[in-house]
Length: 83
Image (cartoon, rainbow, N blue to C red):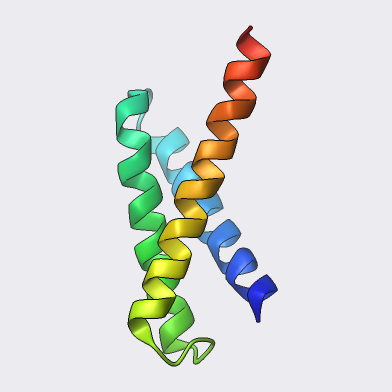
């Protein structure tokens, strides 16, 4: 079950990233957390409606936390590489 969340989040994040790169030239870094929350909400709804998680609140919270955590890890890696 847990790996299914990761796969859905990864696919939605990839789609959002591709859309962002194609249609929007540069997004300030301050809007990335908003994008991560949107990815988490969409992923949570997909998990709920596919029957992966029977509780919608739990699906939303789990996916939002996972997306925000992944965004934080990516920021840490970028900060370390810049130094």
